[in-house]
Image (cartoon, rainbow, N blue to C red; front, side, top):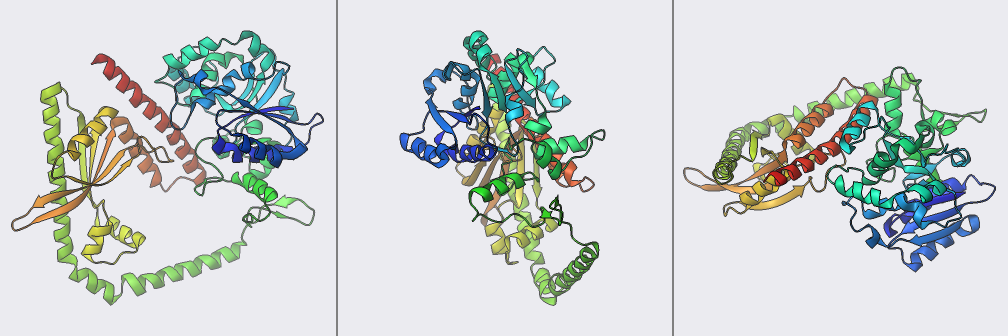
Length: 525
């Protein structure tokens, strides 16, 4: 069985884990594994082969990265993602088919049925991983006229014989350059757009399942609900695509159990599996473990009693009330200073907007919003940071008591306004967090600045900290929806996960739209 990976030197560990997962299911002719790379040194390759041993044949194939110098890339998707598209050109000519796998995969059953799938004269066999709405959006985004599915490129069974005869490499490059501004997941965008009508769809639940797909399936009323035990019996490939990786601490979902089991097999000294995942019954079958109902009620009552005691002993104590009353007047004065700081910063942005209007006949700022933290919010932050109730501790350690949000038309305006603000000699930059270039895992994008600005009072000058957020209209719209979802209490955990994943996709689309609008503006100018 021929298996293909593409990697850089840093990702070899996960490819090793993926290989180990399918070596648990021997095949008659054995495994021949090909690895495309551009930066693995000889020692890395030798060490990798020695770890696999004689259980599989490993061939590293060097790909000259200059061959792809004209292809678009970004920090998350380097040029090596395109190598798989041209696999037929780089692999030995005697191969007629190969199964490409991403490194973030765990195989839990035999690959043989998938590998032997009849191509029926198609180029690839692959799975879709999006719903009807995202399918339509991708068709518009990529200029696809046919009603084709959008395919995930992490699992591709390749018809090498047909690709060698018919694939037009110049067509791929031309499309990638023309659609540079529209490409979000470049390799699978190209594969879907150019070859979507020559891809045979295979069962996603069987060959490309992850927690997001599991949630999407179970969210549909007409579908029979499936769980981890169903996946264990019926699925073959667990694909942890996207940012939700099982080796990260912030993993959301249930299917990381298969990665943890694999890690335990490879290294029995790793952290044991959660005890509430499964246990083996007398008859040898696995069953989920749930707490006994009356024990749950007992624990609930104990927790409630403990909470009441904490409230009485702390929040209602004489010490707390005395401290709160003695600090009330200074606290109100401090919050007034923060409101004054907001007025200073807001004025600076309004002046910049007017100046830009005079020079360029347009206003970069669409809207300005400001706020000072509420008492409730501030107390929660004091508790989270474990601070004393002194004003000095609050001012020193909480930097976003005063906040101002500036909404712009274009992404370039974000950086232009930030630069103009920071060049003013009475502004001191404390910290910058660029969530536009480095989005949060949720998809959140915005430029955050913590600045210090002086306010002039009757008898003194005070330097106050202000958090400044600058973002585009589309970023602000997305952030507003994400904020509402976070505080929505009437949704199930499953619905929350599903909507969070949908918002993640929307964030990528929003970023792509910002880039395209920016490009159109430049052309007009």
